[in-house]
Image 1 (cartoon, rainbow, N blue to C red):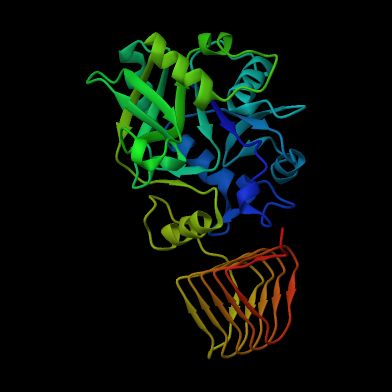
Image 2 (image 1 turned 90 degrees about the horizontal axis):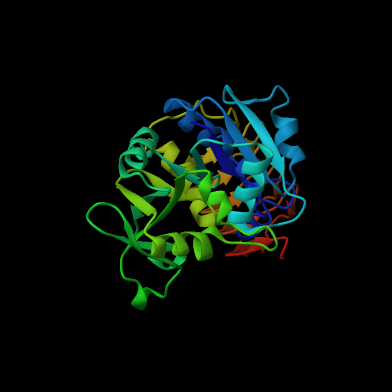
Length: 330
């Protein structure tokens, strides 16, 4: 089955990390996020993928000039303007001439979902569309779904208030769609698959859902992006890559952190529960705690960065204290 990966978003919540890079190209333990997604698909027998591109599409072409991601051939469809999630699916499906049922995945979700089980559930249910479900502690940030015993969706409510949510089971961002779904999506305006298409299909009785209890994480915020890296570091994912090579002085302390290739942690510096991209320099006595630093960030002697996100090539001078900051500020 063909898999269409939605990677066209601006990644606004991850700024400044996404100021120059699409979020699906950000590294999870040194491996671009899109490669984690593609590898998971390959593990479940997917042999070709499509990328629905929008923001900075050339970054993907430049990173994978041989036409393969994690060994899987890929196609691209570049939206001329933002069309919403359903509009992106419609545009890419028509561009790629998809005539058979196909997978759709949000490219910023990391999961160990059994793709084969989802496809089989879709076939047995004779559904027009099937979505994967996941239970979460706070459903208010997602599309909440309730189902009948046979998996037919009763309700699809996008981002309800916590007190009004009928369930903690949410849309997990992986779908199987029949080509007929494309005909449901208008081409005259932006359309949300979560707010329009799926609720309409639920009313029509053609939307089904399969519950899953596996690893799942939406990486759309700096906190979740940091969590994704630490989950891999601690072996909570099924696969763990070789970690990047960095230089750490003997008296430096590095705990629960991912340090990018070419980075250097000087003597008496402390790095805890943080992600440093490539080429960072943490000077003597500096502290980096619960933070994410983009490529080539310099942190001066005795500086403290805590709970913060630092953009590409920024220089934090000696003694500066940054707590719960985005730098540079939006």
